[in-house]
Structures are given as structure tokens and as C-alpha cells.
Amino acid sequence: MCISLAAEKQVRSIAFPSLSGGLYGFPFDRAAAVAVGTAAAYLKRGGAVEEIILVAHDDNDYQAYDLAADRWERMQAARAMQGQGVG
Image (cartoon, rainbow, N blue to C red):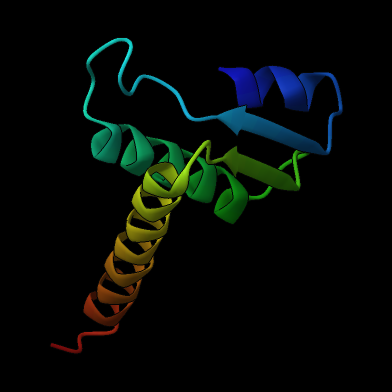
């Protein structure tokens, strides 16, 4: 929703702070996975927004984002290999 609104407003770069972890009790590792997956999928499709920055407030946030990005990359590689009939 926010990314779509940014695209409508012709924003080329947008940043999101770490959300949902702690205060609302949602597991931050899952929140990071959702944030990374959503941002990466949007950027992969291409659109008006060219840069999405996920802001880590501390080392734990950074590690969660890093792990989520690594998992997303591995999942994409596995899907690509599967699409090529490898595996």
C-alpha cells in the first residue's frame, strides 16, 4: 500500500523503519521476512519506486533483515533452477 502510494506520487526512493516487532508482539524475524519479500518483489517487477530502504534500529534488526534477505535470495535462486528443470 505505501509503496503503491509512493509510486503514484512519483517518489523514487522510500524508507521504512523496523515495524511490528516488540511493541505489537509480532515476531520481528517474520516482520523482517515480510518487509524484505515485499520490497524485493516490488523492485524485481520494476516500477516508479527504484529504491526501498529498510531501516534497522539496532544490531538485532539488522541481523533479522540480513537473514531475511539471504533467505529470499536463496528462494529466488531455487525457483529459477526449478524453472530451468534443474534439481
